[in-house]
Image 1: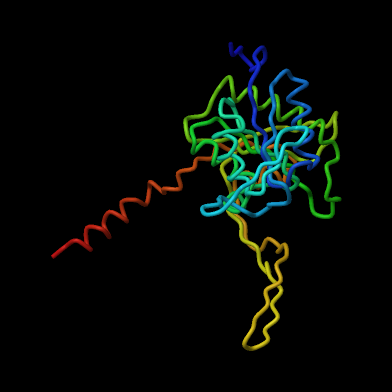
Image 2: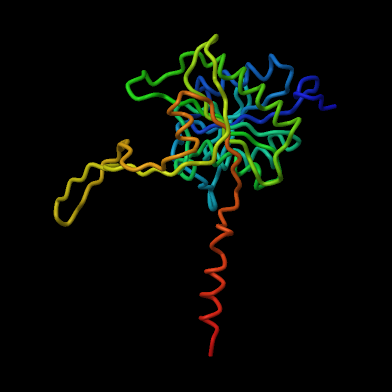
Length: 264
């Protein structure tokens, strides 16, 4: 019985992340969901899997080990969702991925294991939400108030359950790293584009080149209304993201090329 605003019904929620089982963000989400009256099962990687994107295990084992909050798995975030929907919590109503420590905005959603877990869920016909916490430059890399962020995310989830997105679309929620009493000023915006320079330090030894990966600095970014712009203003941002990467407006060009290739 889904009441307006989302309150008044219990949901079965599978929690996933890419920071690993036992990370502060996923523990805060589990506690907030339970306190709100929802049934929760964690199915998370057994270690850090950030940047794993949509990778899945195609040939090999994924092992799940029982833990107090659910299961820790040897696979990727997408593996966790697949295993969870197949066996660990096949009757779940919603998959929530997060709370991730660090924003997942714009083009980063293509690399993010957090976003990938939510994408995997909607590809399998389930409602899903990815939740991330933005850390500002120079800010300590930790949650200021994970409990507060988790409680807010649960309220968003309940709204999403009462007003669902179309099949195949998940909600990407990015929250500023605020404490209780500070206002999120939420908004919605499309994914923005940006590019970083110097993602690697390069050591060229002639017959061998070593690329040492590191966080680059943003060199180019899209101007105007986007999730990135909202986060720069210190606001919470919600974006509806589809698994379908087709660029419909340009598909006519592909059709023209296909037509030329078949001409005799």
